Image 1 (cartoon, rainbow, N blue to C red):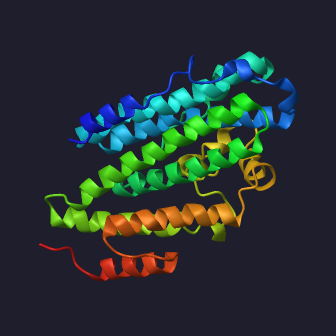
Image 2: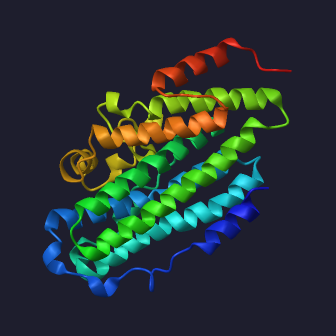
Length: 283
């Protein structure tokens, strides 16, 4: 099982919201209204770990090890939301999300292949790490800069944990299971490393997850300002092609290590995916 080791390692670096965030350094003259509003949107977005956890537990019912790890992931993601809400409570109380606004992002996600979802969230954590690092650079107020740095590090650790479960899948006692996992990981990898070619931000909270609710079936569509994410990325934190390339490179690097191969470009990974599909699963 991976859960005991992951629990121990993450427990060792867990931060304390009371003592590890420099609340006393707050400088109101360095916080604009636009910056404060994006904190609210991110706080609500982070709250969507609740329906995501419900999805993971449902779709991984046969994997108690991974479901146990969800106790860590869910706790830390909700803690991110709580830290952002606490920032607003202290310094911009008029922007604290209402319970109704938070609850609105809790809706059912359609069932999906577990390994594809695992890879999707690995890539999502990689992307979020880079988004939050860029957000920390963009903000000018010291406390929120520190908060974004802290939660960015958490997202990187979460990506590492997901990668551990992906590695485990590839050495599954069923050769067919491992082969299909390779196909699933490479398929989602091609999609998520190609964000610079798509008009929308490729993150789990921005993807359609419930056919009956379409097109209002993304987490972002449930926010008070559904279009805030694109503006935040394009015009505020300026997540440009240079930063998108960093995300793609990180995904390709990890796929290379995972698959014991070399993927310098998305095209390399896509060719590998096609070869896997042509090859029948080993007996």
